[in-house]
Length: 395
Figure (cartoon, rainbow, N blue to C red):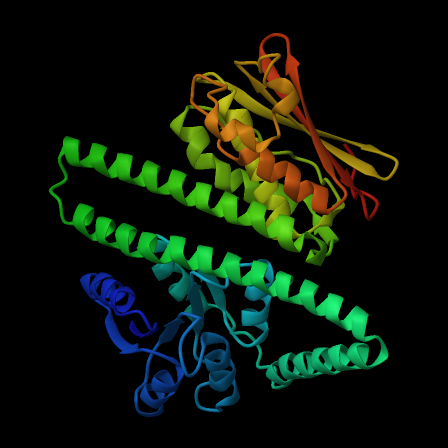
């Protein structure tokens, strides 16, 4: 496979080049979109792996230019970014032609799999009007601000201060996201390369396991912190749509499987159709995964995390039960607060930000979650979601 790597940071391109070449692939490199288009004008490649934030021409514009080029419009594109990582950024990149969207840092095998999937899948249909839509929205926003200033100077000044504050918050999120992810990307990539070259001894396998677990814990913490901050700043921008609860729950179970298997705990998948609920599929799956992982941590070895559901009027309730440990009376009132990241509530360690993340996400959709202790020891997590269509099938 011949891959064009587009990134303005030299170390990022070098690490990816070494990793790809170690797997027998060929690479070309560009520091921005303009340089990438010059290379593509004279070279045939199998896929493009591009950052977004770059000088002269960013990844968004590069996607658009590739899709508008008759010779290049079917070229697979994978976006790999550490700055623009929100759901809206993902949707914008895809509307401009990206086939896959990855957040830095990611394991090399995940990047490689995304490239193979992008090559195999039908590519994102070109939308010539997408970039114009972005420009039109910006122009409309500018005109609206000008009109407000003409009608009410005082109101315009107040609105300007609020706009500046909102932009500052967004810029702060982007800076923090980039400053956290960029060094982690280099650190983890180098670590993968070093560990991959070590002899397959028992001690080395143990080191690889420690590295993998530590990396996943750190990445999860960074993702949770950034998501909580984005919800606090931009929560009103999320809009609910009908989501298949089976699909979201299936994705959540897949994500929680590694933790469950490492603790010899089994998660039982539901066998019935759970219908449609209000939410955003990616975020709903994220919240349910956090709750499933919480239930796993309250389970003893060999236990089963059970799932059940019930429909009451316009509410679908998903019930998650674990067996093994209970929550102390002092911790119960603050279970969904951020405080839980620092307290060890189970023999398996602290819960991180999982309960808080799940509760904040669900609140965006008018949903809720509660927790109760069970006897014999265990916990029950009850998720109440808004039903948006009659549930198909029967129990």
